[in-house]
Image (tube, rainbow, N blue to C red; front, side, top):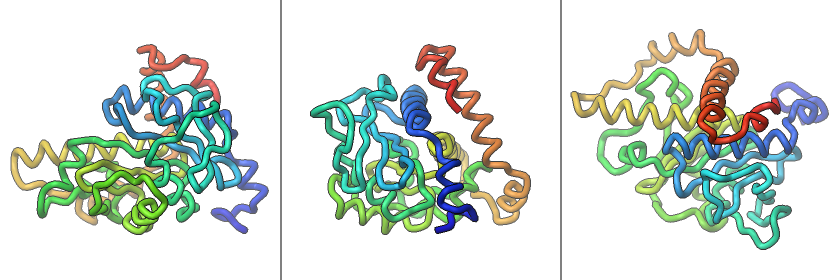
Amino acid sequence: MQVHGKSDSAAAADAPSEASLRLDVAMSTRLLNSLKILEYSGHVSARLPGGVTFLIQPQEKSRAEVSPDDLLVCDLDGKVVSGPSGVKPPSEVFLHCEIYRARADVNSIAHFHHDVTNVFTLVEDVPLLPFKNHAIRWTSGIPVHPDPAHVDDAERGRSIVATLGPHHAMQIRAHGQIVTAETVRGVFIDSIHLVENAEAAYRAAAIGKVKPLTEAEIESFSHGFRRGHHIRKLWSYYARGAIRDGIFPEAWNAVA
């Protein structure tokens, strides 16, 4: 099988280690918590090499205190493969299972419950569109899942997948958001931009009719945008600030 033009062996060689993924998930979780995006509930996950298992935090662990060693390894049926004895994954682990099962391009998922962003599922005729430049990530759309229930079984997970389709983010009406990306750091940055985009639109609506980006504006910004560079730049900014503020130790950020 070819993966983005590479053989399986080459793709495997490029894959991040479990140790580095554990660090990225723990750091992203604490960062999103400190930014008030992921608070008392929600989770970040990372697909492990091999593609059929993933890392996710335990159900009862505070998002402000998640460490690399706390993370569970789950399979695509939501069963714990390894981790601390007797510890359960989040009840909505199935949204992660089913997205990973359906989307080979997705290597990290964030699910959170940001109120201002979710406001766009509560009103008529004001969809969440790309309003800020970095929201070009979602020019294909940000679909809204109509069922606000917790995604606590595989059937509901498959329903989420049907709504998400090929897109990189979605909302669950009156509930929260799901963001997908090719890396953990990518999903962290995308989560920030999704919230920034919604908050900007929300504030603009207080002044007048909101105006999303035009196709020409999207094309102009896309022409010079370098996603990899952007992710590295913003990760460095947020990680260095978190180290300064004591959110996690500097040693965590030392692993590439």
